[in-house]
Length: 151
View (cartoon, rainbow, N blue to C red):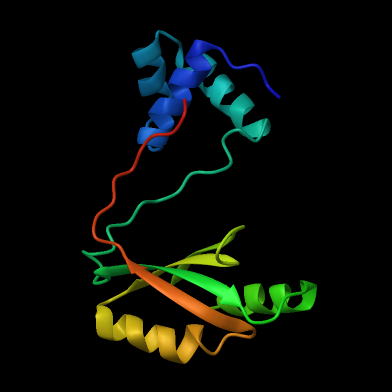
C-alpha cells in the first residue's frame, strides 16, 4: 500500500469533488507548482489509487427520470449460471451498475429509465428474461446525496 501524505489526501478530495480541475489550479490551491502537482497526480494514477475519471451526467435532463434498484435472487446457482447472468445483464443499456453481493440477493442492479412505464418494459422484457433469474425486488430511488468518501 502506498504511503499518502496530507497533500496527497487533499488532492484526492479535491479531484473527487471535481476531476476537471487542472494541475495548475490544484497546485495554487495547495501551495505546489504545476509540475509538482502533476507528478503527484501521475504517481497516484500509477499506483492505482486514481483508477480513472468519469463524467457525471444529469439523467433527468437527458430524459431519464426514474432510477430503480433491483435485488435479484438467482433461481439456480453455480459458476455457469453466474457468468451467463452477468454476461446477459451487462448488455442491457438501462442497467447502470451490476453488483454481485452477499446477503438476501445475489445481485443488486441500478436501472435508469425514462419513466415508470419505461422501467416496467425493461423489467418485463429484459430483466425477467435473463438466464437464471428467480426473485426480483424493486426499490425506486426518491432522492440521492453523494458523499465524498473516507478521505
